[in-house]
Every structure is written in C-alpha cells, then in structure tokens.
Amino acid sequence: MATQSLEDYLEAIYNSLNRRGHAKTNEIASDLGVKAPSVTEMFDKLRKKGFINYEKYEGVTLTKRGREVAKDVSEVHENIKKFLELLQVSPEQADEDACKVEHSLSEESIVQLNKFIDFVESCPEGEARWLKHFDYFSEHGELPPATGDKSHEQGE
Amino acid sequence: MATQSLEDYLEAIYNSLNRRGHAKTNEIASDLGVKAPSVTEMFDKLRKKGFINYEKYEGVTLTKRGREVAKDVSEVHENIKKFLELLQVSPEQADEDACKVEHSLSEESIVQLNKFIDFVESCPEGEARWLKHFDYFSEHGELPPATGDKSHEQGE
DNA sequence: TAAAATTATTAGGCTTACCTAATTATATTA
DNA sequence: TAATATAATTAGGTAAGCCTAATAATTTTA
Image (cartoon, rainbow over all chains, first blue to last red; front, side):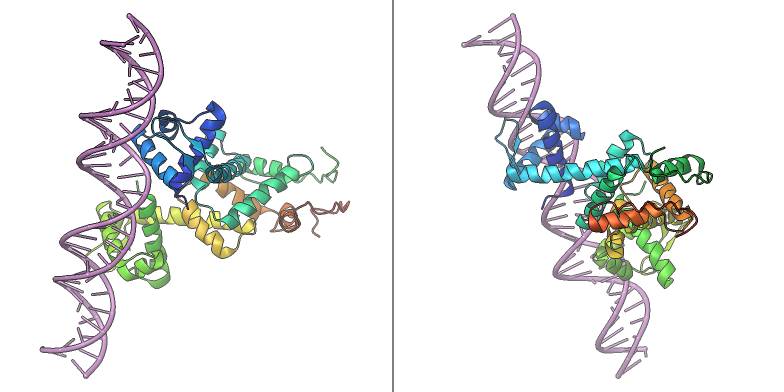
C-alpha cells in the first residue's frame, strides 16, 4: 500500500500530467512545496513500488496501477472538496483540507460520502431545499422562519 | 502548537481521566495501541510544552492549557463522528475515521461542520426529512419515489 | 519486611520524509 | 562545439514517533 505521502506524490504527478502534459522533478517539488531532492527520493520509491515509470533525468509517467491509485485519491479529494463547499467552506480552504482528509477516510466512509454527493446532485432542483435552509442557518444561526409554504417540489 | 500525534495523546489522556479517573503510562499505551516507552517519551514532550503535569512514576493530569486543547480536539472528534453516522457509516468506523480526520480540518471547516451538525439537530422533527431521503438513496441508489405528499412540516 | 511481580523509564535503534551542499547530467547559447 | 546555465541527483544529516531489551522504581504478597 502507498503511504499518505506517496499518495500525495501520485496525485501531484497525475495532476501535472493532466495539466502540463508532463511531470518533472522541479514541477512536482514546487507543487508539493518540497525541495527537489525529496522528489528524486520519492520518485525512486514510487518506481520500486511499481506506480511510476522513472528513468533518471527524465520526467515520470504513471503505470496502470499508479494511475488507478492516483485517480482514486483524486476522486476522493474532489468529493471531500465538494462536501466542504456545500458546507460553505471557501473553495481554497476546501481544497487544502481535502488534501489532508483524503488520506484519512476509510473505504466505508468514502463510499458513503460519494453517495451523499450523488444524492445532493440528484436532487430535483439541482440544489436541494434543505441546503438553502442550511445556508440560511449557517449565516443567521437559526432555522429560516416557517413560511407556511406548501408549494414545494414544483420549483420555487 | 501540538502535532497530530501529541493531540492524540492529549485526547487519550483526557478520555482516560474522564473514564478512569487517572491516566497512567500503560493505560494510554494500550488505548493508543503503542508501547509504553513511546508514552513515556511523549509524556515528557507534553510536559515540556506545558500541556500536562508529569512526575516520573506517577500518572499524569492535564494543565489548564492541556485541557483546553484536549476538549477542542474531543469536540471536533465528536462532530466528525456524528456527521459520518448521519451518512450511515457504522459507529465503530465513524469513530476510527474521526480520530484521523480530527487533525486535518482547518478552523474554517470545523466551524462549518459544527454549524451543520447544529442545523441537523435543530431540525423540527429531530431528524430532517431530507436525511430520510438520503438514507433511502444510500440504500437504493436513487431518490425515493415522489409521493405527491404535501403534508409536510406538520409531522408525518 | 524481604522477595516477587508489576509498572515505568532509559538506552540504543529504526523508518519516513524532509533538508542543505556538492556533484553530475542535460540543454542552451555564444 | 565549448562555455554557461539549468535541472536532477547523490551524499550526508535532522526530527518525529515508534520499537525492543535492559534497568530501575514501586507495589504486592508471603
């Protein structure tokens, strides 16, 4: 299994390949906020574990297995970020927190979080009414005043 | 600031004091799944940082500052656990995941998660209707069939 | 209260993931 | 293509948090 840190490297490589078309030592170093020698060292570990193709003095690519892991981590990241944004956390902070939390959730929690995001996104109006209520609650510290409104589900 | 690991120790000490009335080396070791020498070492660090009162060969107690940190961590833990349980994650897994996630969330996310839990707990019927919808969705993979039901808010 | 059992600490090591400084390889430009 | 600049690697070290084995303190029991 990949450690938390190795997962971070895989994700950074995955994103770099998608965004830049390549993943080089200095790029990953700067993306992760570490120095180049740390990246060289981790590239070597990732290669030994069969996650990346790495030849010295060349950029790296992901193996099938590496891509699978990276994609999984990346998806978990996106879902945690989405969830935090639902909670009115700023996109920047949501992204930063997702980076850390993505390594801490069990498979069971990941599955349920995925379902939760699916659920919210499946809700008829795109944005469920209870979410609007939460937004109000988040801002005012109490539930919105009861309107006696019965005209739900037909869009408002 | 306390590292992730020191926070875990503080929390374990806090819980042990609440549950057993004391916090001794072997107790904390067994609670955290580490060996006794690791605990001795960490007790020393926590003492140096002013979080606990520690004299060799005696159990430890929390200082004011240590208790504050421990209580904060413990509250975050409880809220993450509650949230995961809302998502239908089993209590055991929710507890385990909360242990890890509790150290990864920013203040901003913690505040919003607290609001979310407050919101759900403030909802009229104790358990909001959308939550029941989510439970259905979680089990069946789709939204519950529309019932044309308009008799909301007055209890069902 | 002395011997045995328990509990805690010290000593010495390991691994992970970082770092700086020095070196080597590649790429660019005169 | 030789000199320079850039990029990557190697060498050697650090800190955190864990470990085992050995030792020391405390508590229990005969």
